[in-house]
Length: 115
Image 1 (spheres, rainbow, N blue to C red):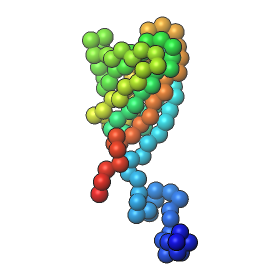
Image 2 (tube, rainbow, N blue to C red; image 1 turned 90 degrees about the horizontal axis):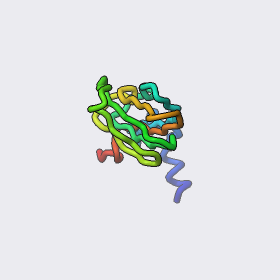
Image 3 (cartoon, one colour; image 1 turned 30 degrees about the horizontal axis):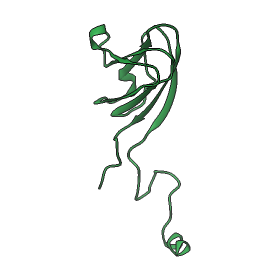
Image 4 (cartoon, helix red, strand yellow; image 1 turned 180 degrees about the vertical axis):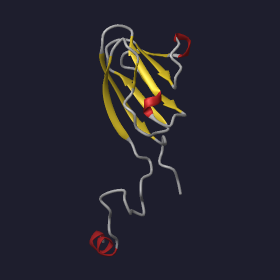
């Protein structure tokens, strides 16, 4: 059965030109963060999932809000999702002390939208 389907349907190995094009373009990153506030690597998205593996508290800021009253506290081994952005570079982070790896994944949707 599969060979018959493959004979008549070209299965794309990329998103380009595919009938089933996945518009939810996602990327994974890891970035070392320190006590200095730094923007995450910029990639187009509407949400970013952040996982703290620094071994310490990390403060998360969005857009240009860098006051302590506008930050989120993310403890070690916790994760959060920031939504309502257009680029992961709109989110910044810094550690309470020291440095360590912060992992994050960009995406447009939490689920694949129905068409």
